[in-house]
Image (cartoon, rainbow, N blue to C red):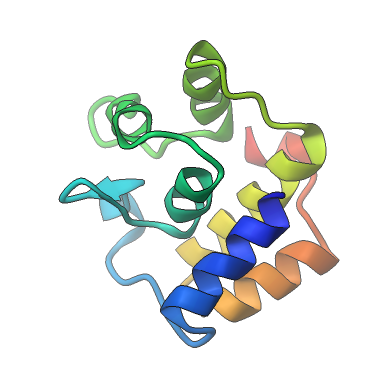
Length: 120
């Protein structure tokens, strides 16, 4: 399901879409709409905007939101991701943050997801 959601996001934005802005300025939600690749995918999977806003707020003092913080917020809202979904989404996020076009980010995430120890 996570891959289907990511593919739908790429279909909507285009495979060449690059999420702009510095890594520290990236958010899951902007102007009450999903913003980053994972924010868009999670919203397609049923995560409501207020929960994604809570994920953004979990970064204190501008620190980067870790995957563990994201999972904690999602789990407290009753939204559970399995390990494969976490790896896929986290890899897509890391690649997006490196300014890789979304189509390439999803393809690479599908082929070689990062290890959990790298992302939390």
